[in-house]
Image (cartoon, rainbow, N blue to C red; front, side):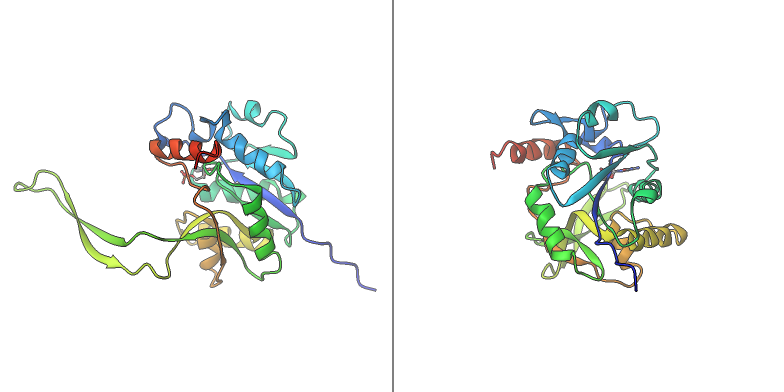
Length: 246
Ligand code: C5P
């Protein structure tokens, strides 16, 4: 008789060890108050409210002094104080730290703390699209704008500051903008991130590490409200979405 294979579970992993200087705040951007609570707490509450998610891990840097107050009474959430010096390092170190709780076949949904507009509906859309997928995938949005590749000329005597011009227009038909969560099985994601580290690939999302293994993550349509807060004006936009004004 063969032992029954346990059903895969779904875990959230939130890298939140960045400092987010471009947002122009005087604290790491994930702690900025937005629509009544810190940006990161919106994300934790959304995952806590999603019945499919077994548990949430939040990865912060070792010296973080703000996280305990933000997590507070958030349900089903564990702090991992093992952030690294890049998003990629924080995710990989978080996966290592959570090893004893997660099986290789369980799914991990990696979501940036800087995307507070995520909803339970979006998490459920991603899970229902991918739960039987052999690779996994991510929320993303087809790009609507016309895309230009830029080239900058160096400053010289005739031109004191550099000038940026269009080198070419890039066909946008098959271009999507990646969002998070990005959802992969624990074993595959860890293997992909370790491979990227070994080969010195600097990556800005989890899917690109999986792509480097020769696999094709699936794209699942996200929503503009799941915007990433990077620059000061993104803060106002994220707040409008959170308040339901747009
Ligand atoms: O800086 P950026 O917006 O690209 O960061 C994306 C996410 O990765 C944020 O949630 C940020 O806190 C996290 N991050 C991290 N460790 C770093 C850098 C970024 O966990 N060293």
